[in-house]
Length: 156
Image 1 (cartoon, rainbow, N blue to C red):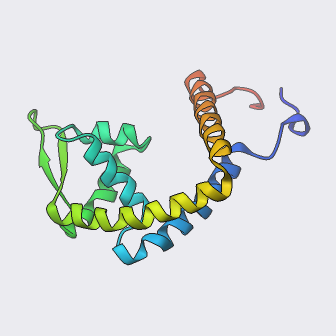
Image 2 (image 1 turned 45 degrees about the horizontal axis):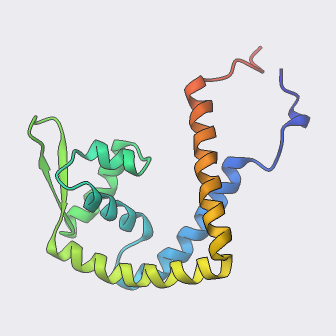
Image 3 (image 1 turned 120 degrees about the horizontal axis):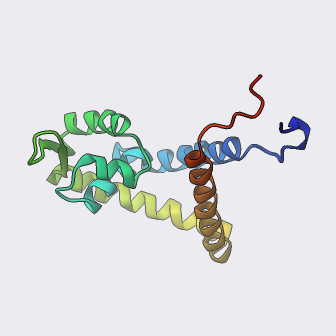
C-alpha cells in the first residue's frame, strides 16, 4: 500500500490543468475578436488535418472523446463554420470546413500566431522545445498507467 505522505507532489494532473486554464484564458482573450475560442480553433485545425476522415479520427487526434467533439461541432455547424455529413458506411460522420469557417479561421490564426509568438518568446525557444518533449513523455507515462488499469492499492 502506498503511504500518502511519500507521494511526490504537486499533483501532475492539477498542475497541468491549472496551466491549461491560464493558457486557454490568454488565447481565448486574443481570439475574442474573431468570434472563436482556442478549443474551437484546435477542433477546426484538426478537421483540416483529416479531410474526409471519420470524426473518430479527429477526436483521436485531439485526445478527445467523440461525444465531446460532437458537442464542440454543434455550435460551429450552427454558425456555418463546418458541415457534417454521413460517411460511406452510414455509421460515421465527416466534417468539412466551410468557406465562412476558413475565413474565421484565417482571422483567428493571425491573433493566435501573435499570442503564440509572445508566449514562446517569453518562455524561450530552447526551453519551449524541451518542455514540449517532456509533455510528450508525461503523456506516455499517463497512457502506460491507464493501460495498466485501476490500482487495487488502498482498497480495503
